[in-house]
Image (cartoon, rainbow over all chains, first blue to last red; front, side, top):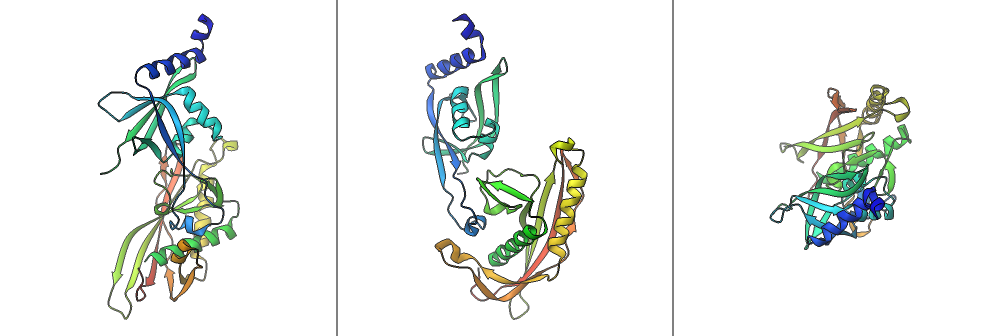
Length: 132
Length: 168
């Protein structure tokens, strides 16, 4: 048990448990769906883009009264990166349209990790509110 | 104006594919010639290197003639970090290659093309050629800008067209 907790994987599990016990919830990562090959309408801005929604969690806001920074469990991010065959989580978040929380779409302006032994156990997403 | 913008993009894309078929980008899972119009893409599309990113900036309208003449300034941003195999030491050469490609596709004759309306594509109809042409001037290259490990440049081209009756 001690070996597990000292490893990067152990820290990742502890982080996930901590996020869950502190009100962690599922959010939706909205990704653009693949374009259609040779479709001029898409390249000219005439086609409505299609989206692919993926559940990501547990996630909590860094501060209860702020929606600027969101913490997401590293294991959840790794799973989505693997599912969508992205090279990295950075590329995933740069490509994402945003995160959908309670039907409000927030743009992801930056992302970085907290790491233990070189293993990301938690992702921080810096969010921007939609323009009202 | 939109038809002129769309027609000029289609021309750039077709000519780039002929000048350098290897200059491609992968955008939303699809490989296409390495030119895109920023306002036609998702806001989240990042500043992709090694491709031409078209922005439409200044617009002017001269209403003195029988048909209003519209002048649109097309800004074309591009940047490159060179190639990994050369450790980026060829970034100057890569930028020069992009300069040459842009000069070739914009400055080649003819510098006029029949304006086309692509609006019908939105509902599955074909593009429709219009009554007038659009034409453009020389490409003007801006200074080289260092952006971290990339070299970047913005070039501009003035594109002119007549605004036909009923055209948006």
